[in-house]
Length: 109
Image (tube, rainbow, N blue to C red; front, side):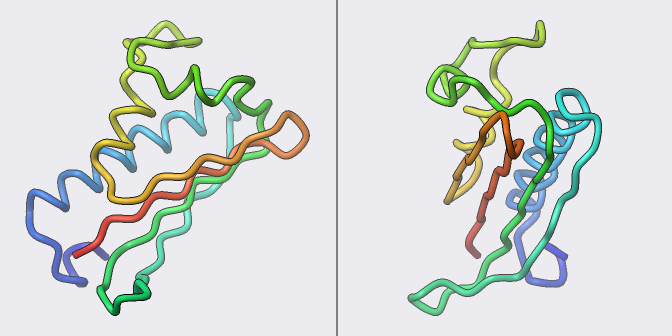
């Protein structure tokens, strides 16, 4: 989809990296979920790609802590969520124990 939209190779690589990280989090922490990929258009008319990762897992208890470099609950390096945010233009997390987690990211052309 990124190729079809005209993203440069560097942005395709960013999108693949973020997709891999966020999909891995869904599988690791919630066991299952879904990813939705949508071409999008900003209010200013620019085009981009929106990726939404949703699960019904246990949620993220402390989003602020999870967004700090080095914070981990899974034994990793703690670079996944903050690193993903740095690679994208827009990044939003919604999470609760009752509903799971939804991460929405956008990269603009």
